Image (tube, rainbow, N blue to C red):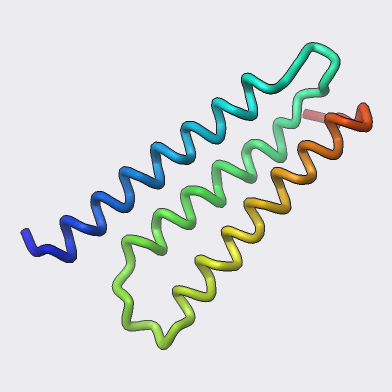
Amino acid sequence: MTDTTETSRRDFIRLAAAGAAAASAVTLSATTAEAYQGNMERALSSLYDALASLREASSNKGGHRVNAMNLIQQAISEVNQGIEFADEHGGGGAE
């Protein structure tokens, strides 16, 4: 195994752990007064999966892979902020 492959796997494991921790934090911070944000939480899961896939991809993409990763991280932040806003303002959703 090459150092690059080993580094990529370590990055993926760190990302997966961070995603699990974030999902746990969202779940643990929820109270019974807060509406379940199923669609938003599924979106977060998909975003974390996409980020992991991009991190595993080769880097010969002319900077577009890195830009995509940055945009996904921004989207993760926005989704988290949306969940927090809905929780603070009694907003839920269909799920």
